[in-house]
Amino acid sequence: MTPSARLAASIDLLAAIETDVRRPADAVANDFFRARRFIGGSDRRAVAERSWGVLRARRRLAWWLSREGAPATPRLLVAALLMLQGWAAEGVAKSFSGGKFAPSALRPEEEEALRGLEGHTLDHPDMPEAVRLEIPDWLLPSLATRFGADLPAELAALAEPAPLDLRVNLLKATREQAQASLVAEGVEAEPTPFSPWGLRVPGRRPVTAGRTFQEGLVEIQDEGSQLVAALVGARPEMRVVDWCAGAGGKTLALAMTMQNHGHVVACDVSAGRLDGAVRRLRRAGVHNVERHLVEPGDKWAKRRAGGFDRVLADVPCTGIGTWRRNPDARLRLTARDLAELQAKQAEILAAAARLVRSGGRLVYATCSLLTEENEAQVQAFLAAHPDFAVVPLARAWDLPGAPPCAGPFLALTPRHHGTDGFFAAVLERAA
Image 1: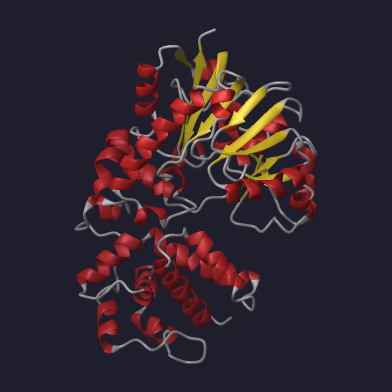
Image 2 (image 1 turned 135 degrees about the vertical axis):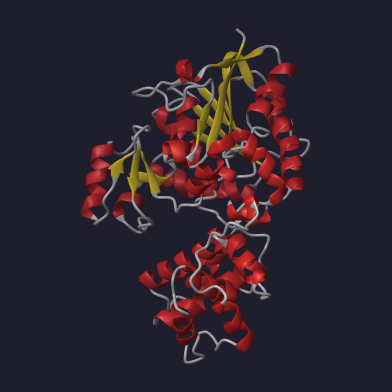
């Protein structure tokens, strides 16, 4: 593809993302490229990177265009990003030539708006703080309370593209063996600093078509997610529940730490997600996992109350900690979403607690950075369930080296730990 054709494809992809507001950008992008198989791998990466660059700077770009009296259309957002990255107005106009496969030519009013951006950068001192930080206005007070003076640095790290983290499947290979297998495929990977099972690949290298992935030696999983699974402390012969299993990423890690012995139940309210986990389980060589669909009126949990050694409740949340990978999510998040999620989290946590045996442990986890979804939920739960107590992170940590956080909970951020943002609390039921 020519550079102009790549720009045109980026504009089309952004238009598709803005139209399909109910689905995350990566799902829209997958369908977009699947319908355009003529776009090769390097072109696909270039188009996606340009589009994701716009999503990461969406509020600031819209602010600049509004300042010039122009609408934030996909084509002007792409053009504005080029201008604020140092392109000259003439160069942008040439790229929007209207020629074959290129974006249609800039209209006079578009050219005039873009000239007003020449010589500027993305940030401007007149920008409102929430715009400059690329977050919804309503969310600023909560994040400011959470991070204080460190908020700009934390959000800057959250705006950077994430590396590709892999979890080595110890049922099939050691970390060194998996690393060597990736190198043989031309993929360089380095051990992650905290997880003894992790490998980190700089950038977004494709690995899913390679033998190392296809044969189940590795799974794609952020290091922070690996650490949450480790905190569960699942061991051989235990009975374990992954209460919000989704597609099974943490389920696979739990089965691995149990060495395929014992019993894991992967529960979820979505049959589609549970069905999607089957292929992953087979590829990983896991055979101690049972799937259970949680439905209204389901008596399964009631019949098995107090029957499990470990229960993981990785609850639905705002997903703020994953914004490195899903920058579009910050554009859709509303205060109503947060309120509804908080109610759902409390309900799920209480339901999961009923499954824990005396002396067993419940791990509450989110990929959020908000106190309302993390510490506040734990405090409310403990107030209502005096038979549970917090197991401090230093005591729950069972991996080599010191835990990455000093407090009683696991609280990871991209800035301090290089992972996605994760929170986990280990809660033990009195014997």
